[in-house]
Amino acid sequence: MRVVIDRQNRNIECEMIIPKNPKLTVDQLAEVKRIVEEFGCKIQVIEGAVQSIYAILGDERHELLINRIEGLDYIDRVDTIQSPHKLLDIRSELKNNKTVFGGIELGERFLAIAGPCTIDPKDPNRFYETAEALKEAGAHAIRGGVWKPRTNPYSYQGDDKALEILMEGSRRTGLPANTEVMDERNLELAMEAGVQMLQIGTRNALNYSLLRAVGQAVAGTDTAVLLKRGRHIGSINEFISAAEYIVNFGNPNVLLCPRGTLPSLEGFRNHPDESITPLLKEKTWVPVVVDPSHSVGKALYVEACSMAAVAYGADGLCIEANIDPVTGLGDDPKQAITPEAFRRLLKKCESIWELRS
Ligand code: PEP
Ligand code: MN
Image (cartoon, rainbow, N blue to C red):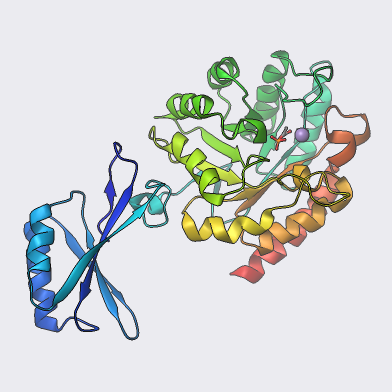
């Protein structure tokens, strides 16, 4: 496959050689190989039972090369395949990227991120105790909201002071931390503090200037970005393209996070969308980390949604958890689970993970 990463026109191009007969003969293949090698490219044979195609692997597009190949009397044509998200496309050369977070190589082992919805700046010990208990229960990373996107303007909106608590929790446990950034000021503070995973929440998933700023800020660093699916996003391509904005600046460590879309079922906070995981996997090489907590919105349903996410092929989960959900801030009284429930959930999810392999 000839993969051209062209940062100007935003399309991935893969050149596929289609022969007139179902397969090239040994001599024909040798001739085709000789020609593409003259242009610094290689051939990848994609062998079908009936029809084979021959992808050109290389970095540049040579019109002359295409003309030489198309000029061979046993070649039907050279097709160009295009994708709107050239970097995240499953055919992109970035598909070999390995995202490592919390000591886990995504795809190799299951990643579990957990922590409260909102860090209470007046009660740092609650966060530290929650983080320790979750680590002990098997979490690989902790989450905690410092700045909160609240629907109601009179609800608690977050506090810069919580950032220090988040990072202290990370130091005490040795687990990397995730927190949401809603604007460029949050972004600057989070990067300065060394937050290891930035979250872009559902409300900002289509805020292209923030996506660009995040992409620029994380370029050249190890910082990962968890991009939640916008609650209003319909198309899968729109979601993938939002992540492409970030990766376009050079850091490929982005994770796609289905977290429920506009509610259409009485009883669930949002419409669960862990079922889009296989679609994301088919189109991209990007790890998928599902957030069951905001999806179903009730602690009681979180375990089932988590197991479904793993069954659908998710690489990990991001779950709201608190040592005492009832007295927590933000979403915790409704949807956070206890560290003990998290431990049980993890065990079940790991068994489903094993069944997949
Ligand atoms: C959160 O993670 O606490 C949060 C507000 O997430 P979302 O953007 O999915 O609502
Ligand atoms: Mn929340």
